[in-house]
Every structure is written in C-alpha cells, then in structure tokens.
Length: 117
Ligand code: DGP
Picture 1 (cartoon, rainbow, N blue to C red):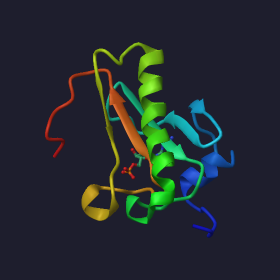
Picture 2: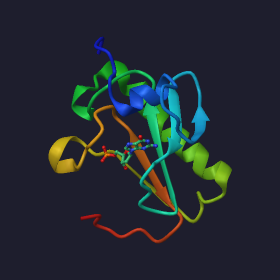
Picture 3: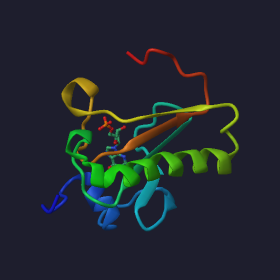
Picture 4: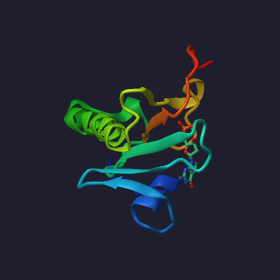
C-alpha cells in the first residue's frame, strides 16, 4: 500500500491527533479504544498502512503475527492474561469495520459473551 493513510489511525501514528498509547515498537502501535466495549479495550495496529485484512499479503504474515504477540504481551504485563481476553479483527461492512486501517481489538476485564453477535 503506497497511498497516504488518511484514516484516523494514520493520524494517530503520525501523532497528528492524540491517543492513549500503551505500546509501541518499530512495527506496531497499541492504544486505548476511544469507545471501550469492555473494561480493557486496546487496539493494536501496524504502522504500515493496510486498509483491511483482505489487503494483507503473505509479505505481511509476520507483521500480522506481531499484532497478536503485542496484544498477548500487553495482557501478560497488565496481569489479566490468566483470567483471559479476546482478540479480534473486523473486516468490511458485515464484520463491522469502521476504520480502514487494520487493527486488532484486545478486550478484557470481564466475562465476554460468545458469540459476539
Ligand atoms: P472497527 O469497528 O473494528 O473498525 O473499530 C474501530 C474502533 O476504533 C472503534 O472501537 C472505535 C475506535 N476509534 C475510532 N476513532 C478513534 C479515535 O479517534 N481514537 C481512538 N483511540 N479510537 C478510535
């Protein structure tokens, strides 16, 4: 993806708008969701612009794994990994995606319902 990332998350990556950042490395940024659906709701995003999971290629396989490992590492560091948590990624309309820069939701802090609806 070479086009400019004009999404709200692109602006967060570039520090054009504020976010409550909890994790950062060379490839990944983690920050609190502005509209939390659970006591813990953090989003992990790649710094590389990928609009939807449909746009990811094999070249990005490691990067996608990094999102998962960043979420698990955060859960362990925050002490709720043993109680448990959920990670999920929405894709396009039926998945409920509203921001078109892929993001892994990390939800925790209460018993989560399944199926999510
Ligand atoms: P999704 O529906 O999967 O595309 O999730 C997008 C999430 O992004 C949603 O839970 C709300 C969150 N969100 C939207 N705008 C902002 C923002 O400006 N800052 C932060 N921190 N989160 C945002």
